[in-house]
Length: 409
Image (tube, rainbow, N blue to C red; front, side, top):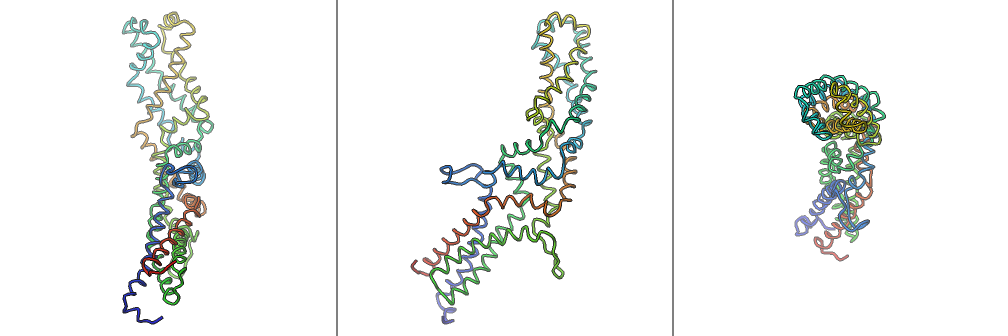
């Protein structure tokens, strides 16, 4: 072909080849990232005609992978609970309950036997309040010690985290998006650069040979290759490789310290919160056992605080009623524990302590272990995303062939 084309009207057609290739690389990589996370729920006609983000569609599997790859390696149930600190928990419970002793006692007695309680002299009521207040610290200490000694049996941390992430797909997405924020930006922008470079090669081929299949096939290759190259640059090489003055390693692996800070903050402040842990113990697989431990330590409180009113109380309630009162007090204690640990200030304070432990452990993971935090996000149905990119690149090549170069298919 003659070089006269450089001064002809066809110049813009040739220049459009790398520009279109850059757009194909950018748009297909952008779409691949979006399709990984969105939509949260299936859109279309199930089961096959439509789409749901890869991460949300396999929330259970992805959550388990995330737990196995990270939390299971950087902190045991006992270590997490010990760093929350049982003594701090006990102190917090006492400080939360003591100011409301009168309210709680009045509420319980009014529910069970309002007439008896309302007719007792105020001096007797005050004695009951004082006995409750006096017994609470020792009772709470024993309760927390009992729970801490059995924490590994009472709390299924993997099940707790998995269940929460399955129910909250937005949070699951957030873990991957925040931890891999720089990598996802690189994937998208690299599509532009790599696409342009591939387009220059494509333009050179087109100059010498203008087969009708060149542009569609080149578009397919660009859509496929830009995604593949970007993914390999993120995770490869696994270990640092020194080439002259340069130190080469996968982009994600070089950010281990930064990612550890982001991941551990999310996990400790949004998942392994004290309130969530208490709720998981009460409602998890060993929930009945946890409740029984609470009631075991709470029931003696009724006997201890009844004092001189115990004969009157037993007479008024009857044996069954008095036993029911102990049961109701235990249920009330469980209810209080749920609400008491929803204080965001206390939760954030304890989360910061656990975060420090987990961050230190995560920064010490080997590259093989560390990559497992983000790699599954790409591995799961990765071929689907690459094929979608290849298909869109093929379509763009066909449109370029027809509308830019005016050729027939």
